Image 1 (tube, helix red, strand yellow):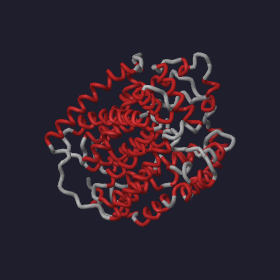
Image 2 (cartoon, rainbow, N blue to C red):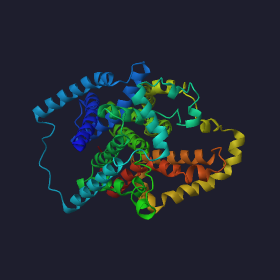
Image 3 (cartoon, rainbow, N blue to C red):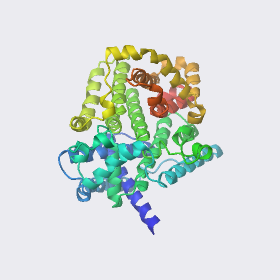
Image 4 (cartoon, helix red, strand yellow):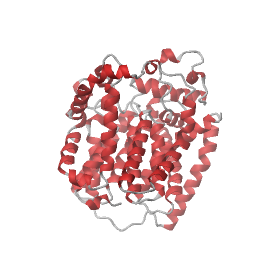
Length: 479
């Protein structure tokens, strides 16, 4: 009975998230014909990305995040979405498509691989509470405060008693993931860390399905399934749960322990792909979607702020290179939506106490000169990490080889837009680590696993590029 009740609560949470996102997706793309997979990915992604932003706006206005207020806010939203779904089903236009070819043996193998991987992720995530320091303190503790105190103006956040200097929960880290966990706990009616990790399961589902939806245009079904399956076979996604349990014994999970790296990778990938589709066929809805997912990335981790800025810069470079005069207008639209969505958090963030460790991060000309010799060593560390088989398999190596072989295709097609994002993002990470004012950058960034997690943020884009380069057909770039 308890298991049935738990499953029902998790389904209710997932359903609410999808219905919230579906209504936004319909508002944006009501005049566009999308595939069912595109609609499902956008509904889940927008639901996961915008729900915490709306919850924060509610709390920012001083409204308690009580169950009654949350149901009053999201209940009508979900009801309207259900009405839209019902109308579309009655018209029999959404689900009716031409009869699709039967699955080939290879496709069945790929689907089975993904189903098994997702089942393992679900069982492992729900089998234990938060088990990583950052998951417990940076994210889980904040979700606990939000659930019990139902406000962002809690002394626990504002540090009226000076407690944060001892707990060190990184108070200026965004609240996207904690708010989602708070909503999940509200729907379940109790605080249960194991079940709250279902939020991360939804993001793994989003990661796999968004890769399929992005790779499907211009490619065969088997090809898109291959790219989707490739992401779940990358050891780093669960290497702390499988390989290290077998080789080392009960090692804690890095990505499935309740951290925000999978959500950030999802939102950045969706933002980049939405911007790419807008570049190929300028429809305002895709530019708006790119800005919304960019705001969601910024509300997930602080790195998301820099990644959104990188995406905006790449858009401008692309448009100016194409000689399009609407470049600055497009940037204004993108930045305007981003600021409207994320502005309240950026303002509120200024009232929060800084983390003591981050307060010591002051860059200066003298500090840069002192650390400039770190650049070769940091670059070598990135290369060693990318080539680590036990973490990435051969994904980064395959991408590098294909990029060299298809370099002419890349330079003559819109694919170079993604290379600006991946290479630019890795370069920014490299510079930050090299010039970081720390005594030992190896201990602070490599031994801690930070460097590996920074690379993971760009992994979905790299796998998408592998898929496109394998096709080696310009027609694959048309959506």
